[in-house]
Length: 137
Image (cartoon, rainbow, N blue to C red; front, side, top):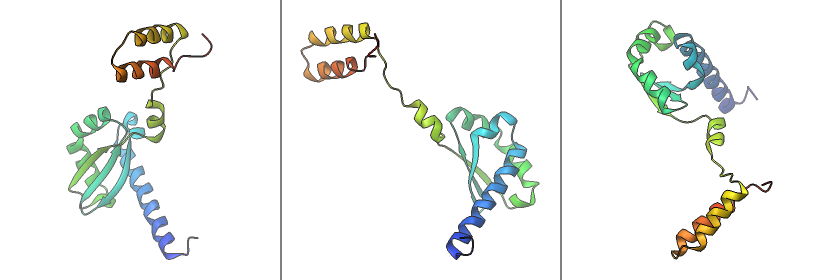
């Protein structure tokens, strides 16, 4: 596979990004390392993917220091700016999808409230919410 030209160039780019990631991590605070990934580096711009807005804000405050430190490394010569994009990690995106889990008594209360509502859309929404009750209660 490594001999096919398109795959070979893709493999080389993946190795390059991996090397840049290691260099970036050597300049980041330990707590920030797992939250910041190199997405691309070209035309003087380093694009970093950050796991959430809090970390993006922290890193933006440190941008000038980080830029100076990265410029000391040969691989980042010509670096002019760092761009931070927030993109939750796949495991975080799945974990943040909230599933309503209601007790049976809460579901009964919501269902009773729904029965007294004349607005059909609101009533339907409350009935959907009530349907998320835990079966064990």
